[in-house]
Image 1 (tube, rainbow, N blue to C red):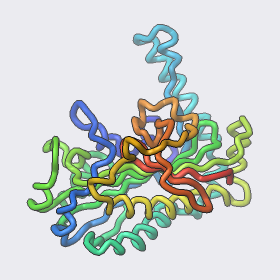
Image 2: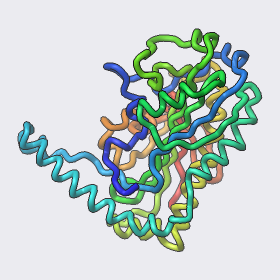
Image 3: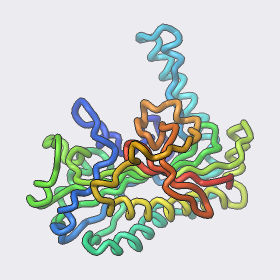
Image 4: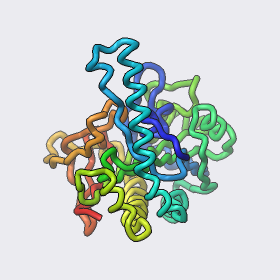
Length: 316
């Protein structure tokens, strides 16, 4: 897939934007659901087939006074920026032509989710159609107790030094017993709306190469030795995020976000966080979070909205 737009930063934006408001990032699974799940279909929407560069939306139009002329300026600037970003990432894509993040991610899910006995996970499959209609058809075709939708997106920051993987996880009930456990608003017009999920959360992995201050040179760092750094980062992202999701899925309602008394740790923001209106998440835009733990590779943070970030220590 050679063309990406800023709107695709979160590939399930259609799910995130329902009606006139957005659902909370984290909705813990109701404790009662565990006894009502007989089977779970696992669906992994990944729109893209290759890595891309995040391109912040132009603000030039607003600076020129806005209006129609400003909008036309922004369209032109965004087009040029996107074209340059596509050119910059080409060498990295070519070096990774034989690497499949889809396969790595799906394999880790297949190995980990069956460890949750009460989930009864099966039917793992990757899908490309992440439109409302496509996801609605996927949900309607399932005969399981619920459908676990685990959407993934992976990209580089505009300057090329940051690699970020974002996973949106949501469980949609199929039985009357599970549907009865939904709280708050339900969106009957959009079956794949996150309002309809009985569990949801966002998980982010972030890693860096040494920032040279030049995008092409940063891309060369990721591309060197057959893209060994990029391959290692994406593989690590899957290995770190899947267990975090499995852990989070089993949290109780009393353990969904940092306690108000929990000490918070400052978290450095990637450059793309300046465009937080695209991804309104504390995992993306929060400046501090609860440090849950550290391992030999990095640190795990939980933000006030319940979302989770794994931040790789040091550079690849």
